[in-house]
Length: 165
Image (tube, rainbow, N blue to C red; front, side, top):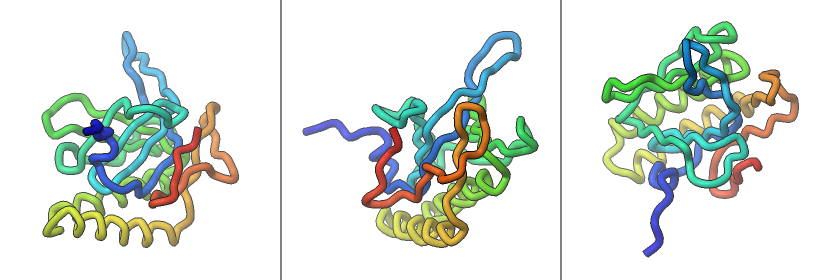
């Protein structure tokens, strides 16, 4: 039997795109590195910038919480805080609207997990939330210079969605 990818265990892809993540550092200097994120029905998968291979980190809805952060770029960051009390993880978006779109979708996934009667119900609730968020258009992405790009490569997830490479 083939081993299931950690990200596949998180369910259907709802949002995906490029962001920056604050990495480890010394003496308070923590660089922001290019990453590729997938928000799935049951959590968040973080990949290297090209989005290929196994995720570097996964954060399960229910095992972590998501919060707005005023860190960097006038509050365009999202903090994922593991419930075990370990250090939070910061992700930088192009603007507050994009950050809020990801936060709203995370919150919808939490709600679906708490109020759904099973996996299929949670996935269906998350799909409905993704469709509602799609009305606002795709989020922008961040290029290597941390500037918004036109013609975004960020996409809504779904059966035909593919990672950018």
